[in-house]
Length: 432
Image (cartoon, rainbow, N blue to C red; front, side, top):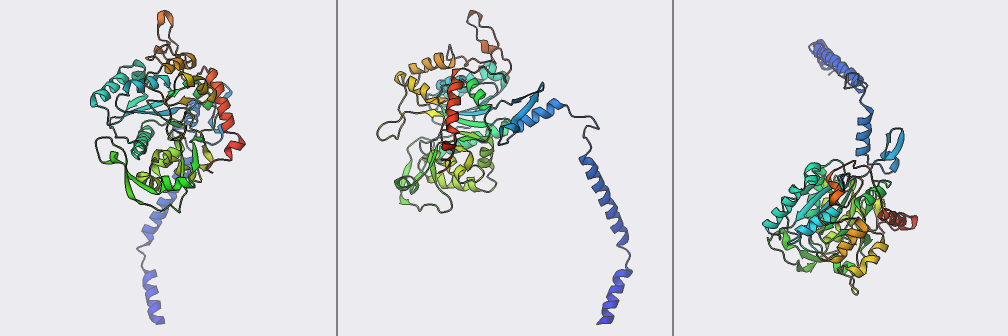
């Protein structure tokens, strides 16, 4: 045995064919290593320093830090907050095209991104009309920040098709625009109570990590009425809108996550929505499948994902930033707002309200007294509007600096609301 072992060893060490390839691989490895090391410290611009303003711009736009200090940029030696950008989804159905345009112009600002979705119940003629209204506006054409979704979805009230449509719009926004901080969903029956410059000004000083989503854990009798029934959304397989269908079967409650509910109207951060779309741990997709047969899934999907995610549950602020008046009893459906609700809307300090009947006179009052609009075909004026007002001309026909704001009384109201929502007492109720 010893002789065989020695003989084997002799054959191995007597073979010198491996020496040349071995040393060649060592030399190549050393060269690659040195190249990598020196490449880390060598400018890709052949020794030229990257301009400071470009570095500052990129860093400020891509900042997702929790603390507002991470969003500070230096300009002329003075530190200031980089103004946020918002992304809107405005949705409607048959007969809503003009209402959607009115809401769009009321919330428009060149810094923001907008997607309009007219559902499949609207005839092709109305969808084409909406597209032409957007294309014919010179400001939309120049800034290119308004899109009409070409793929129309059938959206069923209380069904998961609303969530599917919302997620599709978010995916488009993530693909088309790299720079936005919050997503806001509105319907054609929503309307702003503050100008966009009020909103952008106040949120300039807020951490980009807060999610505004009214939420509460489902407990008690609501578990039997909301969580156990199984519904089918006809919008998933039919081309005509109809009510949800109920099955006779009931399901058990989940044990691996808790169920939350709240308002379907939200203001959500980009990092959270990236998590919902990409779902790197698959949890958002699991919840999405669970809510496919869940009644009123728009009032639970984002809420359940957020409050079961350790990374985001402490960012949830329980408010939908809307003023809504409910029927009483049983407080299940919002009532249409009118002139008698105007003072209550203002005192609520909310930046949005719903729902409004088409062309209700209170909308004209909001335009005039809160938004400074003189016509439904014009934008709410702001510092970015630098055109002449002579002879009734539209000052927003000439666009100026979109990072300069002229906040009004709405900014003060909104700031007071956020101060209350971000207090320690309010924060203790997060996802509880």
